[in-house]
Amino acid sequence: MTYYFAYGSNMNPARMQARGLRVEEALAGRLAGYALCFNKRAHDHPGRGYANIRHQAGAVVEGVLYRLAGADEILKMDPFEGTPVYYSRECMLIDSARGPIAAWLYVANPAWRAEGLAPSVSYLNHLLAGRELLSADYWAALAATAALDD
Image: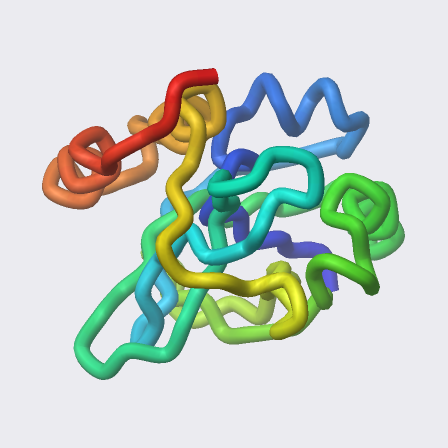
């Protein structure tokens, strides 16, 4: 499998490049039946939350569907996501203009989830950098997310 679905800070193409993943293409992706939340606890900043997804009927998570240069490229992302401690890497079907595509994505482990968290401004800006591949309504909802000062 050579696809990775980013719904959090990795929607920022500059962040992906800095992390060393070789990306051949970026497409708009949608994960139906889930909602974006910021309930992954930061281990070093109390009250700060990172992106995660949760089941929610009728909801959709939008993001960037990256076609990686090879199946092993995803292994480069595991250390950045703290896999397997903070996030687990899972495979899900992501809707795209080309139809459903199986892709890797990261889901926060239950021990690292908490309610009442918020992203930092700089973290939220990474999500907003995916604007080109997000719907206008989804991007506007992200932009309206309450964020903590850095």
